[in-house]
Image 1 (cartoon, rainbow, N blue to C red):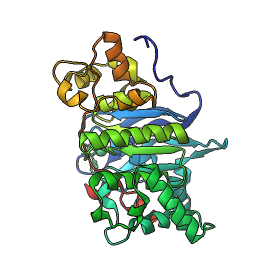
Image 2 (cartoon, rainbow, N blue to C red):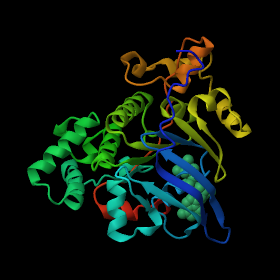
Image 3 (tube, helix red, strand yellow):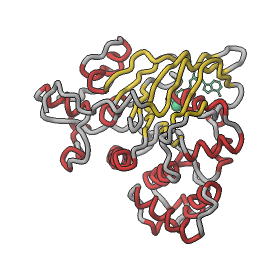
Length: 345
Ligand SMILES: Nc1ncnc2c1ncn2[C@@H]1O[C@H](COP(=O)(O)OP(=O)(O)OP(=O)(O)O)[C@@H](O)[C@H]1O
Ligand SMILES: [Mg+2]
């Protein structure tokens, strides 16, 4: 593939599944923080949109704002988020409340929360926690169907279905994270917002999970907003990347272009802050696992590998890990509701 070929053809901005328009969020207080400022974004159907930016720039606040999970002192001061269903209707997320909003969050737009893997209920087996989602949202399902579906979900994310009988503490961090991702996928959502879903994990596990997400996205067609401060990782998995700084999107573009021709000084600074992505320094950690996807032909090459190819650098990196905790999604609707971002900070 030539360096000029666009690897991941933009997946349909023209067919958006989510539009965020002029979205702003403040945290009120003696010093009001303007955490998100006039953000506009379009997420194409089936697209992986990376959201990058340093700690505190407002990534999680944007995600929680869009999904209406913020609690006071957070206040949405402007804007709208609209979901465009594949069935052809659109929903202004602000128009939803109560049970409708909870159903919507699992069914249409699901989230894997920052720190999620620690939010599985410790005293309830995994099976019951997954089954709870079906009991609440698919009441027509019979017990045997729920158990079957729960096992299928685990297998889908690479966890043996025997683990249904396990408690959270019996699982590794990587497995817990996979369980959270499985739960977020339970009802076949059209959008998954993943806030630092792999950050707490070592690079190898992180890579495996990212591969799963990429594969499942291809299979199931959901769109992803993938949030992390780890820009190299986003270059690996995203179709487009939005770079956020101090509450604003300062650059948004095709992952490959953003990597090879960053326009905003902050994007350049972010790129420069990571060790060499294409050779020299950083090879050791980045080439260890290497682009298994390419070797297996699983998906299109990443912006990084494409760029590396174009530059004639043979090594391509693996996604560096910076792990970070994630989720929440878990067991019940209520847990989703009460663990808004504001709660745990
Ligand atoms: N509950 C809160 N009350 C007051 N300020 C908050 C609250 N939550 C977040 N903030 C502030 O809002 C800004 C954005 O925070 P946010 O958590 O959205 O950043 P982030 O980009 O997700 O960071 P990280 O990468 O560390 O997760 C920060 O200045 C933060 O201090
Ligand atoms: Mg965050």
